Image 1 (spheres, helix red, strand yellow):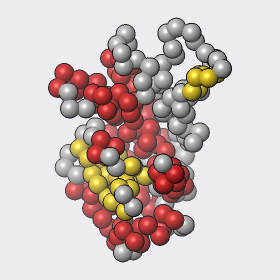
Image 2 (cartoon, rainbow, N blue to C red):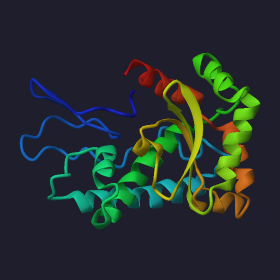
Image 3 (cartoon, rainbow, N blue to C red):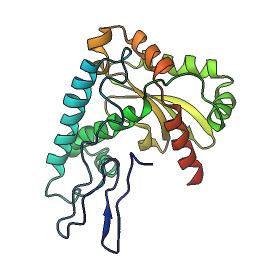
Image 4 (cartoon, one colour):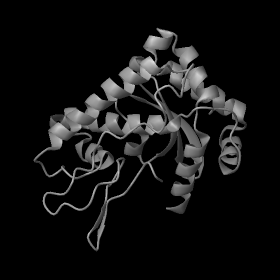
Length: 234
């Protein structure tokens, strides 16, 4: 997928690993950093009126960037330098002395996944294999919608609501703070960020209005289908 490029070193050709942009050529030593502040997959006003340009400016330009910058700072000069956000967070998970590193790497990964989970003109009912799995796993799209929105609304404090695949079934899960389902072996298909910084400028304390707007008007079902296809092929 063009938003998630993997590091391949063969015949002097380098492509960045993880969630990042293509590198310019091959550095010999040290290797180029593979964690980077990736560009948004849409214009900063593309999600209006559901998410404002102002919110994107603070959410992406301040909060997300701060997580990326801190991750780069923390891994500089360590054996973790050169790893992807996902690899860093997995190595840091559960280690008290690496809590700060885990939180920043995981939040960097979570945010990039979220930006790809939304798009202008999104939402609606998906078609194809993912719709079949939704019906099989939840009984109907309407049941899935109700369960997902409930997860987003009832997540206490900061966190995330996710659609994941585990085995051959789809599930709705929620995680607190920087946690995400990959740490439990689940494959995320979509997510909605329910940290207050994701919606407070536009919706104040009305989290319900925010998650309904994102779900019904912005969810990127094409991205979910791509993640599902990748999981099935593994």
